Image (tube, rainbow, N blue to C red; front, side, top):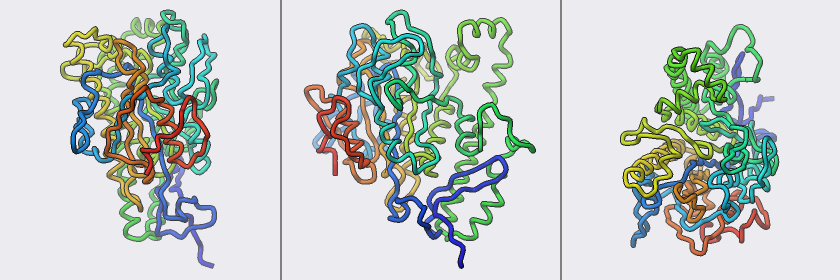
Length: 460
């Protein structure tokens, strides 16, 4: 009998395992994904969260006869304008607090539930987050039910100024009300988890596979597979492996940060340890090192995960609540994000605030364009995704939870309308948008948090 192969498979070698995109020139077997058998691509969801709000004067698009005109902060999205939707007037009612401006607006960004005031390691987000509800539905079909990435490590202890545990400021993804999802903040670790049989705390098997590219480790398997593929799938395989190689090379080039760390004096290291601050955090924060490349590496790893169907659900946090990251690497910015967000309507501060917001939008636009460049049978990877960008508060100076800055890209496999600016009145619940995305992913729930139902006008 002729040997059959699943359309989904892996390239394997000693110390490496690379999940591959769907290959339609390979025959399917009964255990293959339901999406393969119908030539339908799976739906993906990602949320990119940024802290400290936006310059409220430079966010809203201008409504025009032909639709809308992108605002200065949203201008980086011009290339994908027809594949995004901007939502105005949404609020998260359960984030309102007269005692806290940040933590209660971060932890519940994807739960829309009220955060309980707790201390130490005890937490209660009120319920499961929308990404994890999705992961419960589609996660069993992928290597990883969901991926959680970020730039800042999760911090513990109580913020004495407001009486909330800092743990609330470091996660937006919750498996349950009392179980936050852990996050990966190191691009190298994120890459290794995706493409190597990595076990934390374990040394690699000899000969040391970490000295070689993952592609070198699987080259024999790749050559054998290539002979079975049609021309179109051969090109797809080559494009995918080249993208992996590019990320690997960029990871190697991040050695400059390590060189800087080696120059830090023992006294400074001792002080940082007492402050519970890692050296790499201090270098990035205090020295204002440009984190654009690190951010884009994390984004590219998420793209590779979606491309290979290693995962269909991901979240990424640009920063924790009250993020004090130094953005001096941006021209015209001098200082840290949190302080600048408390602009007191000072024109100079507002201008710097806007520049930081634009940087966040540029990274989001980078992800959207990467996804849109990857073709699938029924469109592009972006077409088959829902990529959310937003913050839990509107204006950092007022800690306002009204009229949240929200953008959603992709049509979720043709389920959602795009290319529009929707303006809602009467403080429509953010949970309605979450409910709409669940509906688009064929997850039928009577209600999500305080939702009053899906936004039917958004559905195709």
